[in-house]
Image 1 (cartoon, rainbow, N blue to C red):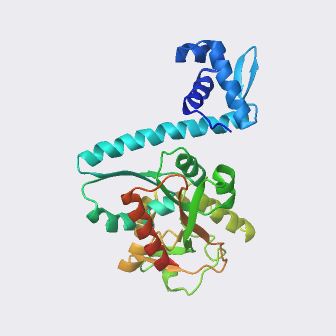
Image 2: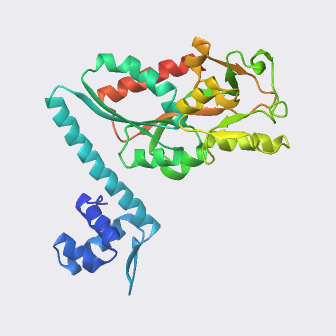
Image 3: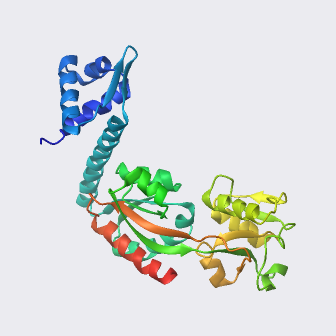
Length: 307
């Protein structure tokens, strides 16, 4: 069976952008009958209908949308290749785009870079912070080289089953966090009920960790605190906890530096929250660059120390 023609994938991409075969044919500077034949050939190869045609234009089917997503990924891959060649000619390592959830960008990613950068100077590296779903979509579109995010099966299976190589790095355990010298800092354990009337400093609603925290209150039969400061990013949140009598719930990984220097203290919670497993993800079909390969190696080393 003949494989898909990248040029025909581009045709489908333009149809999706313009919304009709006529407009797409004009944009591509080809005859509409030729465009229709190309789409029919693609449908024969795929064995699926790629679009629904009507009086109001052309609407892609689910199969068509999948192909367009991969067409966009091909465009990004070619741009990445060109950028790498240009940087290589100038003596630079990269470019490398690393994606991470807020927890990853506030903890393990800076530590990885501290060990990576000295061996790859000069370097071009971009860090993208987003939530799991958006990171995996960007990975599939060749917009990101390596992602560190949770190992949520629903996200991985829904977006990239069979396309993504994933491996676990560490589990994110959560504890109550307070400043050094806080009255709660001397407790062996704390319950959410003990903390009900405290000043809380929490990530904003909508974030994964905030959802977990709110569900912990719900399970304990306690309303979400009203005495509350919402703060993002984590750096701001931690500074507020350091300088107030506020209490927060964070992963131990996020406060590793503060724990080492003694400015923040963690106290185990009586209510055990399910730990989140974080892993590193990359496309199976894309061989990592030397700098990306080294990033993955260092991530494994640090992740083993966090387990």
